[in-house]
Every structure is written in structure tokens, then in C-alpha cells.
Image 1: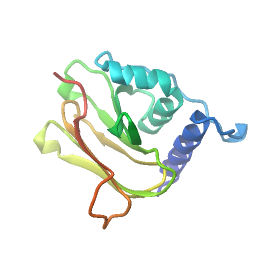
Image 2: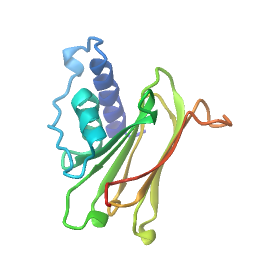
Image 3: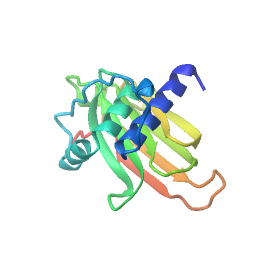
Length: 176
């Protein structure tokens, strides 16, 4: 794992711990950019961002400061949050031509096998994925023209597990 990815994972884990009210040493805290919501963000994403600003900012740090929050979804359901799927985009003039980033945040207290796959709406661009055992999150995965594409999120107790805790296919951005 690269040092940058390790630092980002550590920051997201620290922000998640802080968001649930556990004291975090000041030396570990890092300045975070303000989160901007996409003009296309739905009511559920806006409510999640208001209720969990630390987690939203932490995921933004991982994606990059130029991104805006497009979607934040609790998975497998709003009542049973084992993971949160975040998608961010860099606003542009053509929705299906926007750079897109996705993060699958592990909201359990243990390591899980996770797969996050982001596919461009442009078939020739293909998909990007991150797969492995993660304590904090899978990703970030990027597509230069990911707007209007699909994002696939899977979480299991282990790679060989027959049943998934999370198995979701979503639109990467709100195009319609």
C-alpha cells in the first residue's frame, strides 16, 4: 500500500472514530476541506451529509479537494448500516463526462473483504476497482469520465464467504 493511501486510510479511520465521539489526539487531526454538495445530490444524501459531516469530509480528503459529494448511501439499508457508499464528482458541463471517485466505507468494527468497482459510462474507458481485506474502506477508485456510469459495492466477512453483507449496484452519479 502506498504511503499516500495509508495516510488517507488512517485519516478516514480517525475521522470515523471522531464522528462517533471517541477522543482523537489533536496531533492526528488534519485540516479538511469544506464539503460541497452536488447540485444533483438527492434529499437522502443531503440528510446524511448533515448528520455525518466528519465521514463525508474524510471521504472527500481521500478523493481530492476538487470533488463535490454526489451520493452517500448507507448499505445494505438505512436501518442496517454496515458500509457507506460515497460517490464524488468534479462538476462539468456534460454529466456523463465528469471525473468521478468512489469510496466504500467499512462501518463495522472489523476487517471485511470488500470490492468496489466504478465503471465509466463510456464503454471504451472500462472500470477501475479496489479489492481486498479492509478495516477502514475500499477505494478510492476513479474514472475520468465516470459520470452516469455504475458503481458496484460488495462486502463479505471473507473472500470465500458464500453470502454478502453488502451487494449493491448503483448509478455513480445522478444523471436522470
